[in-house]
Length: 371
Image (cartoon, rainbow, N blue to C red):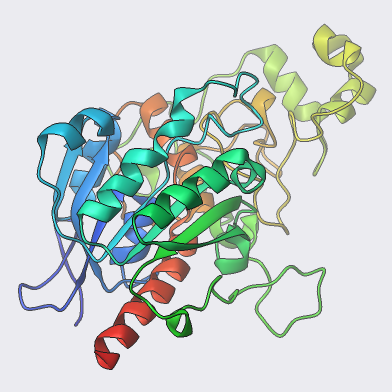
């Protein structure tokens, strides 16, 4: 059944046979997009999206049908009826697992997978898809998650997937846990087969999509504020200091902070000169002919990573970051510049989510036929 587009939101005709999806810790809705939009996967309709980020929920509500709720999951679950769903998806906050978090021990965010699993159980879902940072696969939490899921009747399969292998123009590695219950293993084929391949391996698949594929058509940004019409709405610049501009110009194509140190030590921060190892992406330029590095929430700050434009002397814009994540220009973001950047950097590439949605839809369709 074909989707229709109304006021920019992903909508479904009343008589459409859509599988029901709940997205927890939904953020802007990158994962919902992969499951509900036929450009990526499709075949699902959102019945609930939950997050404690007010701006992200506003974004979700602007793009999808279904209830979008701003609340803390631990409180919401105590007082609300959980809708029936076929699949529960989402990524409990990853900072507790991330190597960027130096205080991981005792981080309460590590435990938010528990209400996620409780909602998966109480919704009657036969499948859940949990997404998190790659480090989760090597964390003691993985065994705890699998034990808890087993207590609810879910078998689980974890895998580390690279979004670039599924058409995202970004090398973003994530742990994906597929949970399923009352499902024969004969119906499970996980992980999904890649649709793209690294140019470094011999494959008949299309090569990874590159930075050039998705942002080369954009002109230089104009202004420093959010505009009114896509794609230029998020394609705004910043006002760098003369010192920052000199630093940008000192970094060659594909270069990084070490090139800045070699070429212009007089304008290199002292802390970088003292630190002679690590951080090869800091103050780096993206390559035209490769996928982007992982887009994080402060992509507009070159000192945070490889976020300089491939040949212009500036950091990438919000529009460029959104495209490198895989969001189409028609996707409507709500909030301030910082709030939107957070939504983009915390998002799930919809190409990856779409590959997962196709797998889940195939599982549930085969089960329905076999019943």
